[in-house]
Amino acid sequence: MDRVRIETFLEAFTEHLAGATTIGLLAVADRSGLSRHLMEHPSGTSAEIAEAADLEERYVREILSGLAAAGIVEYDAGSKVFTMPAEHSLFLADETSPYFMGGWLDMIPAVMSQVEGVATATAHGGGVGFEEYGRTMIRGIDRGNAPSQTVFLTKRWLPAVPELAERLEKGARIADVGCGSGTAAILMAKAYPNCQVVGYDVSADSVTVARSRSEDIENVEFHNYSVEEIPTDHPFDLITTFDVIHDLPDPAEGLECIREALKPDGMFLMMEPEASSHLENNLTAAGALLYGISALHCMTQSLAKDGAGLGAAWGRELAEEYAAEAGFGSFQRLDDISNRFSAFYLLEP
Image (cartoon, rainbow, N blue to C red):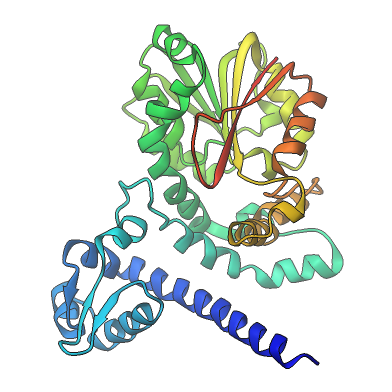
C-alpha cells in the first residue's frame, strides 16, 4: 500500500465530509433565519447575534464556529466576533442576487433523504419518483432557478436569440415546458404583455404554486401536462425548457413533441447543464456535483418511470445528436449567453 496515497485520500475525504456537514449547517442557518440576519447585520459575537436574531445562543455559536472553520464566516479570536462577508451573503441569503445558491440548501437535504431508495434501485433496478422528494425539492428547484431567471431571462437570455425579442414584442404564443412553480412563464408574460404564455408541468403541486402566483396575470396559464400531452393544434412561436430534457423518461420523444408543437418558423430555447458528453472532460468539482445530483435525483426519477435515465451530464455532443434525431433542422449553441453552470441551445424545425 502506498502510504502517501492513503494520507492524500484521507485529507480529501475529510474535506468531502466537512463539505457535507457544512451544507447541513447552512441549511439550518437558512431555515432558522440566521443567514438573512447575517446579511443585514453581518458582525457580532455569538451572544449578540443570537439575541438580535431571537435564536438560541448555543446553536448559533456552534453553527458559526463550523462556518468559520469552513471559511464561510470570518472569526476574530481577540473580540470573539463573527463576520459574514457581504460577498458570501450574495450566495447564501440574498434571493435577489443572480449568485444566490440557497436552493441547493433545500435540494441537497431532499436528495439525501432518498439515499435508501436510490441504493435499493441500484441493487434491484427502478428508481425514486419525483414525488418522493416532496415539497422541499420543489422549493429548492424554485429557489435555485428563480434568481438567475429573474435577473437574466428577459434582459439577456431571450434578447440573445436573433430576432426573438422583436417577435415577442409584437405578440406570440410561448410555452414553457417543465415550468415548475412558474417563475419563467410569469416573467415572460409580464415582460411581453402581447404574448400568450402557457406553462406545462407533470407536478401537480408545482402547477398549483404557479397558478397561485399568477392569479392577477391575464396572459399566462398553467396546465398539469407532460411533454407528450402538449397540444399541437395551436402551435407555438417559442418553446422554452430550463433543465428539463435530461429529466424526461423519454427525452427523444419529448424533443419530437416539442418540435411538433412549434410553428414551422418557431424557435425552441433549451437550457441544459454545462457538460461534455464524455466523462474525461467533466472530471472537475462541477462535474462531481452534476453526476451526484444526477444519480440522486435526475437519473433516478426518470428510471422510476422506466425511462431512459439520460442523466444531467448528457452533454452538448449528445444534445445535438438527439436534436437531429427529433427532426430539428437547426441546432445552435448560444455562446453569447455566459453561464458557468448552464448551456443554452437554439433549435429550429
